[in-house]
Length: 400
Image (cartoon, rainbow, N blue to C red; front, top):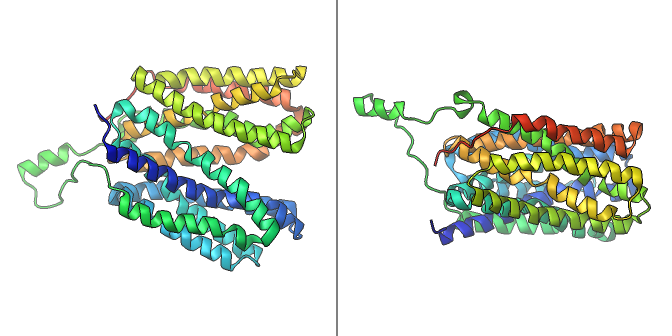
C-alpha cells in the first residue's frame, strides 16, 4: 500500500510538536546550575527540575481520553497553545522560584497533550506496514527537543538570565500552535454510535461498538508492564552514563559529548528497529529480541566497569542504542491493539507507566550505585529485561 503524502506531513508536524514540548519540559533541569549559583539548594533545584515530569504524569491519560473524544488536531494545537501560555507565565515569574516551578508544572501538564495525540495521528495516517518506521521517526522528537534545550538554555540563562532562555521555547510553541491548527488533519476513524431512539439497526450498530481492550484481553497490560521494566535500563544509562564515564577517567565535557552522541545513535536505532518490525510483520517478535539484547548489554556494561576496558565509549553507545529500541515497538503495538477508539487513552497509560518508572530511576539507581557500585548496579538492572521477557505477548493484536 502506498503511503499518502499527507501522512508524511502529519509525521513532520507531530515530531515538531512533541520536540517543542520536550524543549519546554527539559528546560528546568538545564537551569539547575544557574539556580544553584543564585543560591537555591541543590535538593530544591532537583525538585524544581522534576516539576514538568510530575505534570506529565498527572495529565497523560486525561489528554489521551480527550484525544479519543475530540480528535488529534484540537488536542495538539490546543495543548501547544496552553504550553505557550505557561512559558509566558514562566517568563513573568522568572524572579520567583516558587511561581516559576508552578509554571513549569503547568507546562508539563499541558505539553502532555502532544505525547498521546502526536503518536495517535501518526498511527492513524500510516498503513500498518509502514507504522514501525513512522513511529521510529516520531520517537526522534524527544532527543531533538532535549538536544535543542541543551545547546540553548544553559548558555542563555548564564549569559542573560532565565527570561532569555525562555524566548526560543515561546517562539517555537507559538509558531507550531498555528502550523498544527492549520496543517493537521484528523485521520479517519469509525463513526460514533448515535444515542438516539433505539431501533433494530441502531441496536446492531451499538452491539458492534468498540469493546474496552483492557477488558477483552490482557495484551495491553502485558505490553505496559514490559515497557515499565525495559525503561529502567534506558534511563539508568541516560541518567548515570556521564557520571560513569567520569568515574572511568573521562573529562566532563568529553563525557557529555559522548552521552549526547549516544542519544542520537539511539534515535537512529529506533528507526531501524521500527523498519525491521514492518518487514517482519510483527511488533512483539522484535520486542522480545530487544528485551534479550537489553539484558545482554547491561551485563556487558557491568563487566566493562569491573575490567575498565578502554573501549568504554563503544559499549555505552551500543548499550544506549539497544536499551531505547523498545520504545517505538511498544508504542506502535499499543496503538494498534487499542484501536482508533481507545488508542489515546492506551497511549496515555503507556507513557504514564514509563514516566513513573523513569522518575524512580534517579533516586533508586543512585542509591544502588552509592551502596554497591556501578558494576553490581548494572548487573541488577540487567535482570529486569529478563523479567520482562515472559510478559511479552506471543502474537500481535491489531484492529486493522
